[in-house]
Image (cartoon, rainbow, N blue to C red; front, side, top):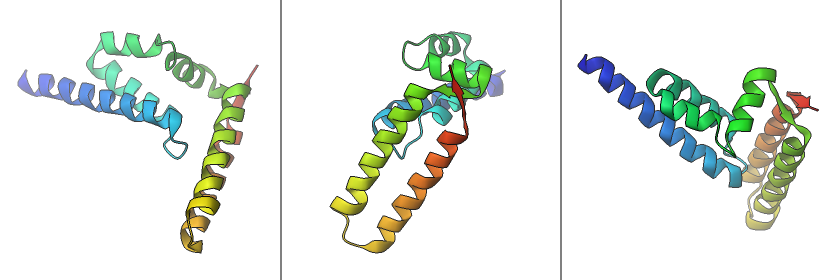
Amino acid sequence: MIKATARKWSLAAIGIISVGLAAIGIFVPLLPTTPFLLLAAACFIRSSGRLYNWLVTHRWFGPHIRSYREHKAVSMKVKVSTLGLLWVTIGYAAFGALDSWPPRVILVIVAGCVTAHILSLKTLD
């Protein structure tokens, strides 16, 4: 009984931390939002029906989870805004804030990989 309760509390805590990271990821392009929301949903469904229902019906987070869960897709608006913010931020960081080439190259490679992943997702109508 104690192990089951501790497991549920641990999963709920991981889910809450994941929601926090997802919220930060809305504003920080290199921190992905959707994977953290999916992790939170997986943790909440095993630990707290109330938290899971809150997450999937949340005004900002719910549509991301439902779209990905049901269709493995995101809207064109999400793709465009994500990629636009990603490249503006990476462009500024790589070529406006950094003086060294190795970090610039790493940032551009990461942005390219994120772009490839976003573009590989289906687009919702």
